[in-house]
Length: 160
Image (cartoon, rainbow, N blue to C red; front, side, top):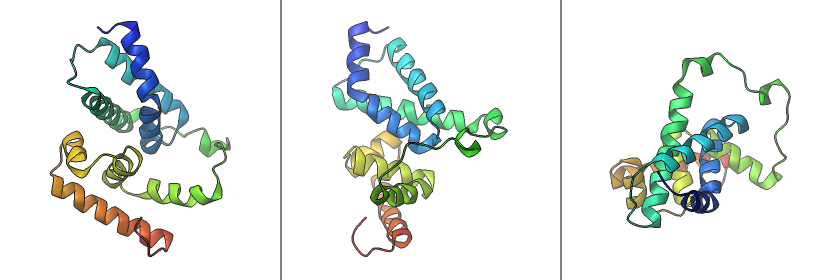
């Protein structure tokens, strides 16, 4: 079990990363908050010793992705309707970002993961491969294909 200081430090450092990953996968604020609490509870109760800050961050990303996937697999979830679909409007997103965000969220999950980790968290392909348990060449292929999909969807010629 970790100390309160270690938990507070981890939350201060990685809260935004965990929340963004959850929103990308779950597209729901309530589920995001549930997974956020679950991830940091696992962190607090974990006895894993980390080699450095990057190892700690990678562990939190992996736990977050697994928790999101577990939630999405639940049978109960497939029989519910999100509050957003009932009329509650999410916070406004500037028009320039809305189209890009929608395009990224429309990508298949494997592509969303590598796009997020590469462009938002600034991980290299070898690091992404290690985090996701994928071959480095697979990560390069996923990035290349996701760029092409985004280029087609957004209608641009520049590198996505």
